[in-house]
Length: 341
Image (cartoon, rainbow, N blue to C red; front, side, top):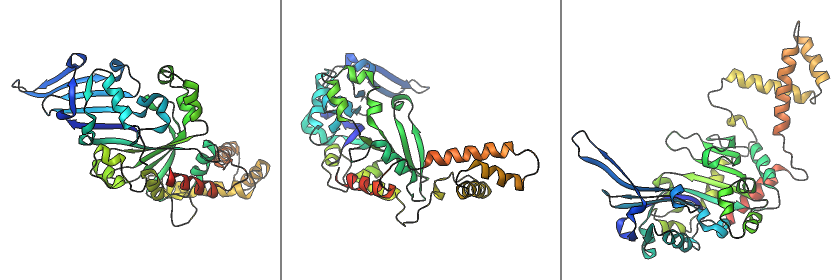
C-alpha cells in the first residue's frame, strides 16, 4: 500500500464547495504598467492552528486550490500515514477548519506536485542497528550516503541520507529513528488526546522517507497519471522498495569506494586507504603504529600520530556495532520488510 507523509496537491476551483476568503491574506504583484501578474489568497499553518495542515492557497487568476500537508493531520492515526484508507479523514479534518470545504467526490482532480513516500519499519532489530548496517552497505556508484541532521522543520531528524548523483533529478531518501524525533515535536504531541499511545507506536521504528518533487518521477514510481486517488490506489512495486533496489550495489562487490566525494583527488583516496590499511594491519595497536611511523619519519612524529589516531577513531566509529548477526543479514531483512510494508 502506498503511504505518504508530506504532500503538496493542486486542484481546479470546482473541487471547492465553499471558501472563507476572510481567513486568507491576499498577495498580489503587478508589472510596471500596473497590470496584475499574480493574485493569490494564502493562509499558513500558524494561522490555521491545525497540526499537519501546513498551508492553503487559492490562485484567483488560475482558479486553482493548492494544499500542503503532512500525515500529522491524522492525529491519533499518524502512524498509518496518508493512504487510501485514511484519505477521507484527511479531508474531513481540512473541512472542519471552516477555511475551505472540499468536495470529497472530486479528490482525484487533485494533482500531486511533491510527495514523501514513507515507510515505518518495525523489524527484529533496533533502528540504529539498521542504520549502522546501512552505513556499511555496498552502494551503487550513482548514490552516496551521508549522516543526516535535519534543519528547520526536520531539525529533530537524525540518521542517514542516500542521495543520487544524477544531474537532472537527485533522488533523496532519509532514514532515521522516528521516536527520537516525535517526542521532541511538542506542538504535535500537545494536540493529541492520547499522546503516550501515539508515541509508543513508534518505539523501535525506522522511518524511511523518499522525497520526490517531479511529476515524471511520481508517475514512474506509481505507474499512474499522478492524480491523488490514482497514486494512493497504485498497485505498482512500492516506491521505497524500488528505490532501495536502485541504491544497493547489485554487483555484489563489497566496497565503499564509490561513497567518497567525487571531487576528492585520487591521491587523497590512495593516502586514506593506505593509512587505514596500516592501522588495520597493526590491529589498532598504537605502540606498533608509533614504531612503524618512527622507522619511516625523521624527527617529531606527533603530528603523524594525531592524524593516525583520528583515522583510527573514524574507522572504529564506522564499524558495525550489531552483535550476533552479519550486516548483510540485517540489510536482507530490511529489504524484505520494505517489499511488503
